[in-house]
Image (cartoon, rainbow, N blue to C red; front, side, top):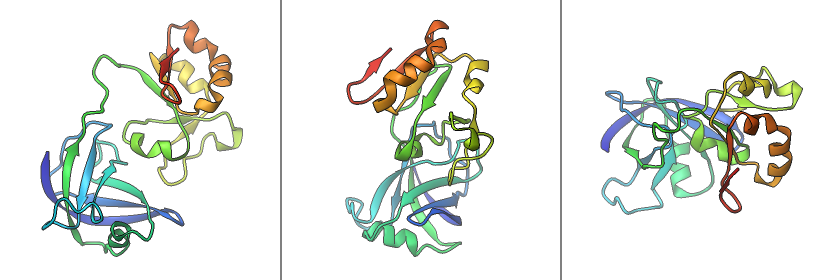
Length: 195
């Protein structure tokens, strides 16, 4: 873990209440998808949870910048983010966390939606969607390419993470070919299971 002064280089409004903030570091840091960082606005009081918050990386480790994405509210932390100007500097502690994929998970796919996408943006190459008019486009905000489900058929995966748990039965049945190839589904909620 390092403490680094980062310069705000870009603000990207994603929707009316969500914004991404890109920061340039004096030197590139190495992080593993799944790790996170802390933005420290109250340097004198590191325990101040009103002004110092943990956020997921929403950029790939291959980028020259780091990015975080936050739903902005009226909280003191959100207000500080809202007031950030291009060129402003903030203290960042990173990388943090050990919830990462180990080398024994070589091929994993994710089936996610809603706010579940933010922590895994740094991991994803693409998203699949069965809705034809979304295919060939990009996700709003994160700009992750959206492909037809056939894309995962071309590249065999060991696991598919299915976060749309309330549709798990239908999805597992529809994507039965995945299990026929020896692949498994990870369904983390409401009760974690691997099928």
